[in-house]
Image 1 (cartoon, one colour):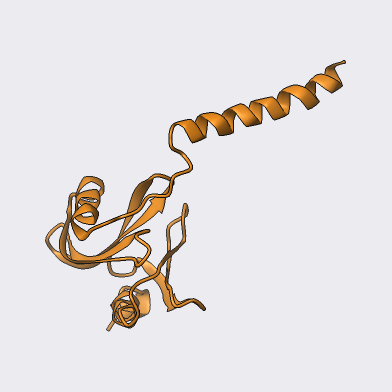
Image 2 (cartoon, rainbow, N blue to C red):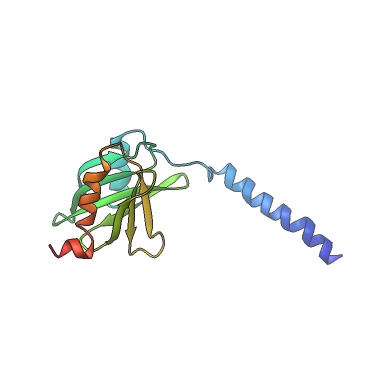
Amino acid sequence: MLFWMLFVFAPLGVAATLGLTWLVGGFKDARLEAADAARRWLRELDPAFEVQDVVLAVDGRGAIFTGEIDGREPGVALLVPLGDRFFSRVLGSGDVVAASLDEGGALRIDTHDLTRRTLRLRLEEGAAPAWLALLRELTPEGAGR
């Protein structure tokens, strides 16, 4: 009897969890419509980062910023989606392990972060190489130059 109850109640519990997640908006992808929205998100998540320039991903699923960390060190900040919200990464000298363009032309950034080591952003055509050069300056090899 207990064996059969597992086959009934376990799928019902999974379905209920998925249903509640859907109801509270957990399956929505976060999108940015304008640079001002990206600036607001970053100001909320990392108020110590002083933004100089921002470029949105072409699909609205993130942004990349240049600026200063605590008003001293030049750096790059990233906004990437996490469900219906964004999270940020501020990258300074030595924080980038590697930066490259993937097969689809998206900017791929590998960091030392344990929770999300690889971040991707698809920028407008022609914009990625300049950001790639800047990110490579933040690698340990580039920081020594």
